[in-house]
Length: 266
Ligand SMILES: [Zn+2]
Image (cartoon, rainbow, N blue to C red):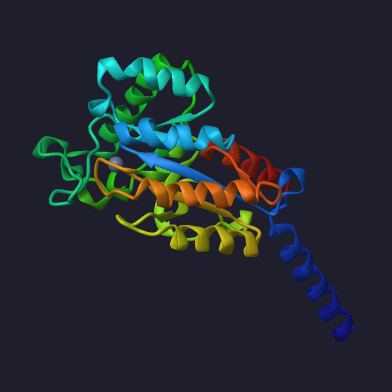
């Protein structure tokens, strides 16, 4: 009786492990999402042509303050060509003293309540709707920070309010288990300024070996700031193109929609 119970327990555990493993569409073995923050000119100049030459599309997290009126037609064109425009807030509020934080103390996270932050992100959704015509946008935390005044974390309230469905976190990692995936903090690889393609390709290979999802975060590519050399970026794109039969390169929301659907089936 006792032995039978152990067998049942082992069978249940094994079933659990099997279910948690991600089954990717089209016989792919892994997914990589390429994301680009802060609406930088180098992303339009160098990244988009590289991606489009390979038949890939990226996710570009814009914040309201940085989008110039004259650039709006270009962002709209990018969205029309299949790139995803993501929400990175209106004023990019970070904790005071963070390198990336804005100069105005009124726009540091310590000055925000959870409600303030949610209102700002909703407004940026409307701003993006006016550019790309889409009612839903993924979110990326400015400076990777989500703690506002009184130490409150706005990540869960943001999703619970239905303002966004998915948010990109900054903890380094690869998604391998849908059951453990926190859709409010999807793990990533932040590309270090000056990092070489070897490091980026190693992360993609790790995602492939683990059958998981890797999300890479870039800022400037071939210019602007926190810059990765455009040739190093191109080598990553070339690697992904050479492995397109195995690796799905999709936009953040495309891939997360798929994972949410899979999570719902379990
Ligand atoms: Zn940013």
